[in-house]
Figure 1 (cartoon, rainbow, N blue to C red):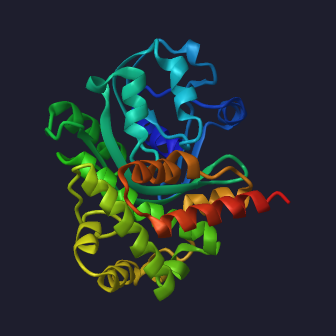
Figure 2: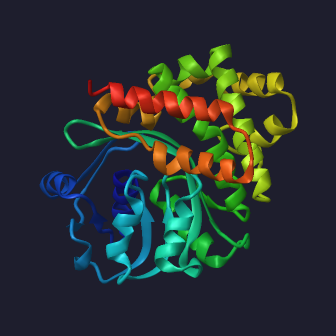
Length: 310
């Protein structure tokens, strides 16, 4: 995602610097940002692997996997940023930014876009549905509108929204089921989301996550990867049917789509379980909210991850 956003912004004439791990830095210094698929881009930008080299930037876009986010942000506390947002998975990512930089500079964001890192270091851009940006206090402020307009004009479909926190949580409720099911079933997405049993598991997870959101006082909506607000109001059977309806065209429109969790699993990379699903499970336990399906899926994915190296 960082390569996709960075390359689009650079092509549009914006000053872009990539702060990445040394291995990725070597690739980008040698070959630049290369994107194929929905866009064909090749841009060269400054590449940093040492946060101390950065002093000031207008907007920080956090696009790394959630693993080790707090440790990655710590060396950036000295940098003067005007604003920052995270495109990471889950709904606890904003809390890490707030802790590091203060709430006044943090915006919420979520992205229904995706790509896949190729062995040669390029990125295959596979989805560009909509990225959303908004102020955490619910106001549609000029700052969020300017950032959204900039990204949209660069070629990544983006809009500013008022209820960004509700939208982040709405995505998280659906994503948690998709993420764990993808690893458990180790299948391209359309196969498990159009299977009635797969849809039922995803629906149960979404409803359990919805109970946690309700306990937080967060209003969910249906404008996400799943219509989670309606799924939480109706019956379990109705929720499963909603999953099937939402995904009935996936085989035709995205036959090779794989969740990033499955990409990580098959590549031998660590999963984002602890920083996303496990945090939700701990908060639910603290609040006395039962999450039997998500808990089972979490432990199954943990077991598969450990068995992978045996």
